[in-house]
Image 1: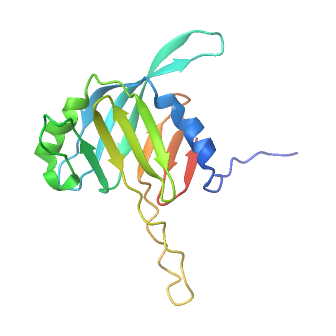
Image 2: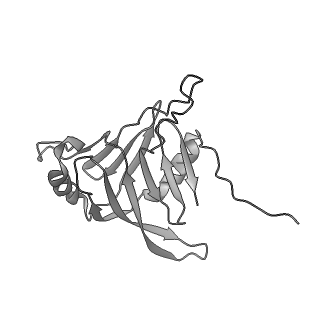
Image 3: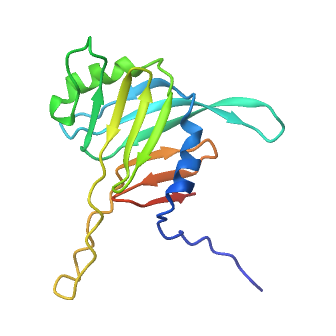
Length: 174
């Protein structure tokens, strides 16, 4: 008797495939913002994403895009004289991110070499800087696993989780 065990795939460094996976963001609309308490700079955007079915129909799938690291900035139009960064504090962060509610995603770019990400919402731009890849354990520090926290994560319409980072890598989990 053969059994199948779903082992997690090793993180990928295929940037082309990651860009293909992120195409699902185009046309998505921010419907809500969640900023947990504290000044860590963490937040999540609830997105309404078009989910195209094989039968040709489309539904709206609501999925979270979560920024898990503090290396990001929200650039606002020139009329809003400031950019928002994690140092803004939770209150101002929530207020500034609420400006994204109702905005559609117009562009998504992942750049080399470090896989910085730019998500454009018309004239607002969310830039997520890459974290350093985790440090592998050494013989002198075998107990230090390194920080495996992704830079950001997206729940896909398929309900699978796309984890980007740290560093130039990504993985999909089911």
